[in-house]
Image 1 (cartoon, helix red, strand yellow):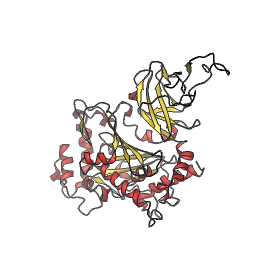
Image 2 (image 1 turned 180 degrees about the vertical axis):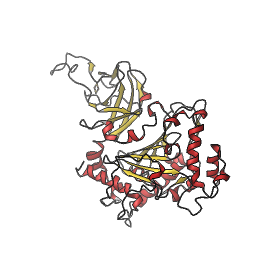
Image 3 (image 1 turned 45 degrees about the vertical axis):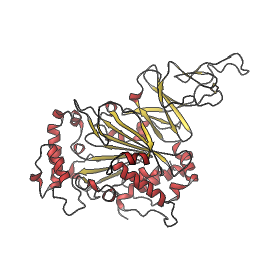
Amino acid sequence: MADYITIPDPAANYPTSPDAEFPRARGDAITGERYTSKAFAEAEWQKMWTRVWHLGGRVSQLEEAGDFVTHNFLRQSVIMVKQQDGSIRAFHNVCRHRGNRLVGTAEGGVNGHFTCPYHGWKWGIDGGLDWVQDEEDFAEGSPCGKLRLKEVPCETWGGFIFYSFDPNAVPLLEYLHPIPTLLAGRDLASWKRVVWRTLRVNTNWKFASDNFNEAYHIPAVHPQFEGMIDDHYSTTVFEMYPTGHNRMIEKLQPSSRYPDAQQVKPLWADVLKEWGLDPAEFEGRAQEGRIALQQARRKLGPARGFVHFDTLSDAELTDQFHHTCFPNLTITGTPEGLHVFRTEPDMEDPNWSTFDYWYLSPEVKGQDIPTLYGMRTWADAEHQTGEFAAYQAEIKQGDFLIQDLEVAVSQQQGLHSLGFDKAYLAGQETRVHRFHEVLNDYIEGRR
Ligand code: FES
């Protein structure tokens, strides 16, 4: 069996993490049943989802004390609310009188209290119970000062709010390690979420963890990237960390997969020209354009408004840094911004999931932000939600998210087949194996 990791070009000045570990995959079987079985989904809830950190929102959604966001996960719901001292605390979204869901909206603001719609109990934003109707009529004594909303761990990093159902969760930065360190060149707390979409998709949530853990699918699913993203495993950096998270770095250059990789094709010529480089100079040595691009962006970027280039490494000025955070979050850093992908399981059916796509951007003075959906002003986006089928009809073909999600739907169909027993993975897909083995470690009590 081949080693799972390839660092083919240490001279390329990649910020390879010292936290990467180099074990071989155990080889746990990745069966279709993992994606289709209600019993397996229940085990995921009981043994894994109750113990990990969940992405709940952006800090920028909470401006004043009393501002809140809620996050529904399977049958649970959590309120994250800004406190008088500016901190954020999270509580189970349930009234402890008779179990009514306390807040029914995704976000909003309250003036000091959450008032339960059923009997009017008033819960302070700090979780204390401040007022009940007919306080004297309780044989066990007034619940005020006695009951509190059940609190869950809540922490922030990079402008993201996270919570956990596990009262004994390790600190967030320890859980995410080393991802925050690897992304430290980006001042994410100040970046705005200029795209915020949630789609309901006919596939299991694990498709995204699998998909974003490998580049093996790119030639077949995203052929448009051939001229500018090098998907070949010989030039890609693969890393796995003891915390269960992974990283993959793809170079911005024509793919080494093809014999004409050193010819300048139109897409690559456009990339070079955009930064003042003459494509003709790179004919026969097209991949050398990557280093030239780094130098051009370093020199010209700040004057063009890309002041954040000053804190990025040379490789970060060109390449795609995919961080797959166990279990369901992928954060991809590009020179221009940050793609955030998240999938979550459906409440009833393991064949369905929700897929979130956020695009975060730094301010580029005086310029709108190019996104998958055209130009956007540098401002927090409204939340757009819908069915994937409607999104397919709206968005032009060639959108890489459509391409990934179409394959996710057809894979989910295939995973039910009697003709599929288990996955047969290439070495460059070892992080897929690793993801499932970390999941098994949770379910089987090794984590
Ligand atoms: Fe909330 Fe009764 S259930 S006040």
